[in-house]
Structure formats: C-alpha cells, structure tokens
Length: 506
Ligand SMILES: O=P(O)(O)OC[C@H]1O[C@H](OP(=O)(O)O)[C@H](O)[C@@H]1O
Ligand SMILES: Nc1ccnc(=O)[nH]1
Image (cartoon, rainbow, N blue to C red; front, side):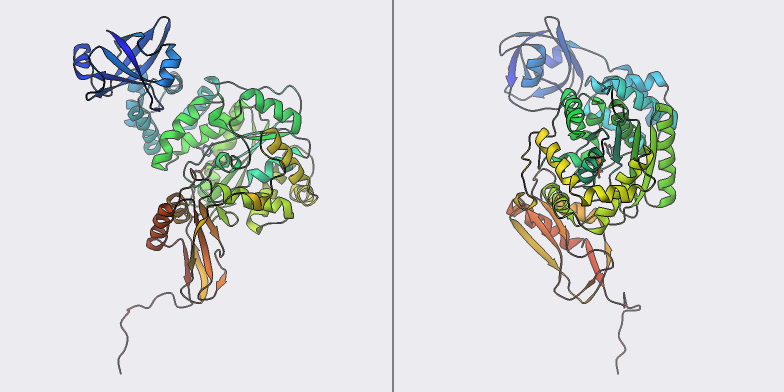
C-alpha cells in the first residue's frame, strides 16, 4: 500500500509506522504488528501504531530518524508492506519455554536486535526469558560472539591492551575514573568502554560525562588511546557490540541484569576492543548483584572460562559490595569524589583500596611487578594518575583544568540525621540507589546522596547520616519521602529490639 509520509517530531528508539485506522484495516495490520517501509532502494522495519485523528487516510506518520534513514521528506511516497514475525520470535518462545538455543538461533536473535527487527515486547521477552531460565556457557559464548561480530571492532597493532570492567550493582563504584589513568600512566593501553546506569544511580559513562564527552566514535577511541594511553567512553555511542545498549535499554526500567546478558554484555565489549588482559570486578554482598563470595566464585569462573574460549586472559576480583564504595552516589558527586581523591592523592579507604587493588591486578597480569597494589599506589601518590586523567579529559573534549570543587552539584539538599546515639548497623545499597534515583540521578547529573556515616561508624544523636542532593525541589521532596519510608542508613544502640515489647508495671 502506498502512503504519503508525514514526518512527526517525536523520538522513538524503534521506527514507528503511525497509520490511520482504515488504512491499517485495509492492509490487515493491527497495533504492534510489523510493516516494512520502502522508499526507492531503502527500507526499514517499523511497528504499527494507530493514530486517532491526526493522521488522515492515505498518510503515514514516521519519526524524523526513520525519514532520514529512508531518505524521504514530508509528502514523499512510502510503500508499506506487512511482514510476518521474524524467525527469531520462535526462538525467543523456545527460550521462554526453558529450552537451550542453538548457535544459529542466538545469532539470528542478535542480528534482529541490532536491526531493530524485534518489537519492544519481544526484546523484553527475550531478556526476561534469560532472567528466568538462564543460559549455559555455550549459549553465552555464542551470544558474546554474535554481539561482537554484529558490530565494529578495534585492532591495536601495537602496545599491550588491557581493560577492566565491573559487573555493577554496588552504588558509588567510581573506581574506573582512577583505574584507567593509573594504568595508562604506566604505559599500557586501556580503551575502556562503559555502560550507563543499569541498576545503579550512575554508571561509569554517566559519571565520566560530567567531566568530558563520552560519545566517542570507534576511530576516536583508538586515536586517543594510542595518543594518551586510555579513554573512558560510553559503549552505546559506538558501534561496538551494538546489541548491548539495545538490551540495556530494556533492562534499565526493570532494574534487572540477567547473568547471561551480563556476561555477554561485558565480554563482548572487552573482546571487541581487542583486550588481551582483563580484570572483572565482581562486587558481592547484600543488595548487590551477587549475594555472597560462593556465588561470586561461580560467576568469576564463568568469566574466566568465557575469556578462555574467546582468547582473553581474565582475572576476577571478588570485591566487598555490601555497602557503597566511597561516600558519594550519583554522577556529579561521584566525579567530584574521584577527582578530589586524585587532587589530594588520598581518599575514602574503600575507594582507594578497591581502585588501586584492581589497577594492581592488571599490573601483575602483564608482569610489570609482583606487588601490583604498591606499584599502583606509587603512581597514584606521585600525582601521575591526576596528570593522566587530565590528559584523558582534555582528549575527550573536557576542561583539563577543572577542579573537583568546580563540579556543579544539585543545590537543593536535605540532611538526614541520626535520631539516637549508637552505631551504623546497616547501609542498604538498594535503598541508597532508590533515594538517589528519586532525587533525579542519573539523568540530573547533580542529584545523588553523600554519605557521612557508613557501616560500623559511631554516631551521636543529631549527627548527619547522609545528605540528599537534587536539582529540582519536587524531586528532592520525592527523595526525602523515599528515604523516610525506607531508611537507607540504620543506626542502632546496643539493645536492638525488646521482645516481647510490653513493659512491666509496678
Ligand atoms: O551498577 P549498574 O548500574 O547495574 O552497572 C553498570 C555499571 O557497571 C559497569 O561499570 P564499569 O564501567 O566497569 O565501571 C558498567 O560499565 C556501568 O558503568
Ligand atoms: N550488563 C552489564 C553490567 C555491567 N556492565 C555492562 O556493561 N553491562
């Protein structure tokens, strides 16, 4: 059916075909069905939406991006052809029923993800099917290879290429901002790609974006890495493993990260940039992605085995993830904490120990030293980490002279204080994230939470436990409501509870 294009100024991740009810009926398609839009030799797959009123019979509404992709303008003719569900739909159903997929089936699914041939519902079903049924290591390997092969890759002809990645799940994990320059200043190449927040209040890409541009092309990643030693780029802006960001987009609103997708997501990015030695940070503990060290070892084993199959030398650092790393949670606050530590050459113990410990593992893997932690600490304390970080920020289009105290933080704040004398019995990861997200993170860069007291700290009645930052008053109010309903930091005295709770009367 030939229809006249009407360009609609809306943003949609997936192409839409907005049709008049009677045209849709004539074509035999319903809301959510697929159609192929053809203009000359160009075509794309779009999802049908039925317009009530504003698209007249004979017209078809398409988004600006689709118009560009098809090379059409307002008033151009577009051929609309109904198409059946792709074969990968059946494979998703197979996984939903709990069966193992074949290599070809997984490749087909990944190709369709990359080509936007799956609807939002189908892609979500795929993510949920792996969440519920999991995948074995063969399937994960095929998934990873398919993700690498459907995108672009980098080949560094010279130098030792290393990388680090965290599986995420622990708030305040700004360690990459310290690890990358520390490693790069020792002469290694570290072209780090990061994702944005998946389950947290700030992913490394969100944090780095406070200080520099993270939307780098694959050519820029290569050029900057060869010139200054490292980058911190957002994987989603490149064509590196393009299926990854499309999958993350459906994981984010659900705040889930199925283990098989996590393995493939991380390892596809590492494989595509040609890393030889990789450290994977696996935070474990209550409220993180992995509950305990035992489970952490199982996941670590999968990472190492997957690395072996793909030709990457992988070491996992199973790290303490029971409470936030450092004190700051949220993009600008985390960038501030990392930069401040580099400026002062010291920082929160958890942050320093973790960042330098992981940099140290990389140094030991490549045979630079047998005491990696000390080697990393020397670099950090000599000021070379900061110097290199500034070079990286400048190379990524940021201001190399930015000082931590210049970073804009949300000016709407609220202090949560301790109601009693006692000690911090618990800091809940998930509750901290909920508060920071309610305050606007990661979208509002200046929103987040700054902890003043962490687990085990002694506190006096009236001490500030944490401060909430927001850019907008209404988001601050929402965050306060969340924080009061489910307190992220719990202080207790020596008597935890009284049971039975009645009191004896004389
Ligand atoms: O905590 P959540 O949001 O689930 O995980 C996502 C974060 O974990 C990884 O960390 P890194 O890039 O290795 O520092 C990702 O790239 C991203 O920054
Ligand atoms: N699923 C993921 C977890 C952490 N980092 C990623 O890049 N992807």
